[in-house]
Every structure is written in C-alpha cells, then in structure tokens.
Amino acid sequence: MKLRYLGHSCFQLQVNGKLLVFDPFIRGNTLAADAGIDIDAIEADYILVSHGHDDHTGDLMYMAERTSATVIASWEIYSWLNKQGYTQAHPMNVGGSREFEFGKLKMTFAAHSSSLADGTYAGVAAGYILQTESKCLYYAGDTALTQDMKLIGEYYKPDWAILPLGDNFTMGYEDANRAADMIGCNKIIGMHYDTFGLIQLDHKKAVSHFKQNQKELHLLPIGTEIAL
Image (tube, rainbow, N blue to C red; front, side, top):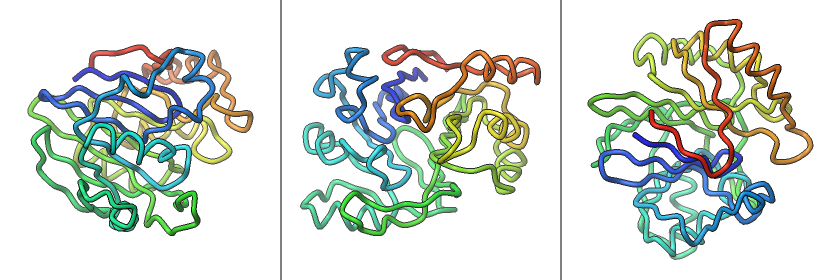
C-alpha cells in the first residue's frame, strides 16, 4: 500500500493495483492549492465517502464524473448520486462488509452528523476498515471517541489508522491517542486539522503526546506519500 495525502481528510491509496480516493475535497481547500495539488491530475478507480459534509464531498461529483470511478458510500449518498445522474456507485451501511477487487471493506460507525450541501440527509457518518492479505487499514472518518473502537481493536487490530486530530468538530489529539489504544494500533496518520481556523493543531504537542505513549504520529505534508 502507498498512501498520498491530498489535504484535510482526502487521501489517495494505491492498493492491489487500484487507486482509491477518500473524501475528495481539493478545490475548496486553500492549503491543497498552496501545495500545488491539481485535482485534474488525481486518478481514481474508487472513491470512498465517509459522510456528506462539503469538506468531504466538495469535489465528489467532479472527480467521479472525470474519472468514472465507482463511488462507495452510504445508501443515502448513493441515492443522492443517482438523482444527480451518477449511477456508478455502490451503497453500503454501517456494519456491512464487502469483497472488492482491492480488498475487503467494512463500513464502521463514526460519531458525527452527516448532510449534503443542499441539505439532503446523508445517512449515518462512517469510517472504513480495509483488509488485504498483508495489511489492515482503518480510516476513521469524522468521529468522536467511541466504545465501538474497542471492537475494532478486538477483531481487527489495524496495522495503520487514519484518525482526525483537529478537535472542535471531531476528536482532538488526546482522544485520538485514546482511540489508538482502543483499536490496538501504534502507527497513526493524522487528518482533519489546520484546514481552517477552528481545527488548528499544535503539531509539536500532538507528536510529543503520541511519542510519550509509545506511538508514531505522522502529520504528512500535503502532496507527500508514505508506504504502509
């Protein structure tokens, strides 16, 4: 697996010969623009959507139509896409799992609200667990700390986890560290921080806090890639 950070909560993952993009939000993110991210240069075979908020779906239709990617999302977002005329999509719901050509995907609960920019209810907010023959990756989506994370630790023990850190709308870094304990994962990649004023992160404090708790916290510069 290779993971490229595209800003906010948007990542491109190379896995088993396929390109997955999580929560496309590029053009509305000035930090991504400053880093030289060109949305038209981002390819995708699949687009995974955690929930409907504009900072996770702002470029969903644009990217889907340009790449003809299969969109994986809640039933409600799937239905909304169909109404927009985009039918290359696969619906899921929390607790469900499915074998795809890139690996086995499970949709997990995320404690967060979810609606689309036009006010449409977007179903339950979610995260994803991706299992391949060699690795397990947990993408938490926008979430608070929840007891459900103990089940992820009991049954999956991810090799890597992508967790929100920015506080205010999601977990802050201290709760993210607790989440890492609960899911049994010591390699964490941060997301959902710094994009706007309400989610500014003190990078030194966050990295130090994780290090003190015997964990690696990776705060990837936008546009960079990491091998998982």
